[in-house]
Length: 376
Ligand SMILES: *Cc1c(COP(=O)(O)O)cnc(C)c1O
Image (spheres, rainbow, N blue to C red):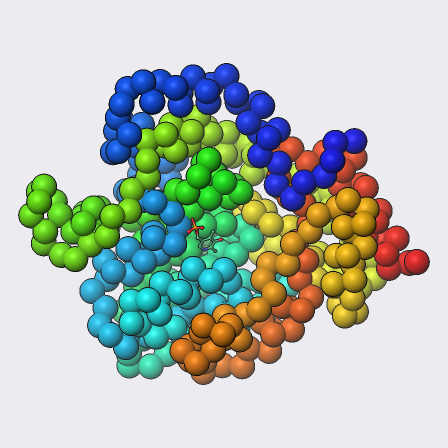
């Protein structure tokens, strides 16, 4: 059995090595490093994959979220609703722009923000919601978009962990994750489901006006060279990263399917173990399993992690401290709902190895040792 890794970037590289090497070298030889043809063709192909949403590539997923918020013309002190159980970027950008993060709780079975908490968190200053499609499945966008529409709120989807997931927007219509709200933001950080070999990100929008504005903001607030209409930022996807993504994008669906197969096997083998809760799948969204995250309910999560490490099984805690308990944010974020589940699951979650090249043997070995820990 191959050594088990949390994410196996080497195996994936080996499978695509010939194509990747050739494309990267061709890009270097072309000398087009910034906004070259590789970036244009990646934006076009990703747009096709996303059923026609406009795509603007940028430097990373955090920038994508920041630029998306900048495009909404919000005012200092305006409020943005976001889950407290998330990666820091979702909340950080709100604070950086002088806006107020209003944090809500999550459903402990799915780790997704509770749409019931949105109504209770509204105020006259609420302007936007950032649903985070955490671990690979979508927040209930049918319900969330209904609330946003009735209150005239913007929706920015944090799609960094859910690229490729199809989500119901009505009972019988599905749409790609990240293309349902006003703006969707994603990351191509190497370990994401679609990752490059450095930093990368993108914003999606079906609204042409917003897409143009985002494009301008990501490029120093200029449309015409050296004429600056707004204060923007410099946030670009470089051509070498785009070349890598161009090779990888056609494989995304197949990789996501392999992640689901791995999750099925985990579910089957872990379901019987007392003190372990497997992640629940929602009926309204496909799951692309960016993470496979269990909950350890007997208070021994950290002990289990240590035991697994001794068996050469890596695992990670996503995320150990909710945003409202972080030193940088505890005084800054506001809450109008209790965050009971967030506080509880932060002490219970454990993400197990998950990537498309995980073998059946490896998953069985992992599950066997999880079982052994609780029966020993
Ligand atoms: C990875 C990630 C981001 C940020 O992406 P970077 O490219 O690392 O800046 C934002 N939100 C979530 C939920 C993420 O997982």
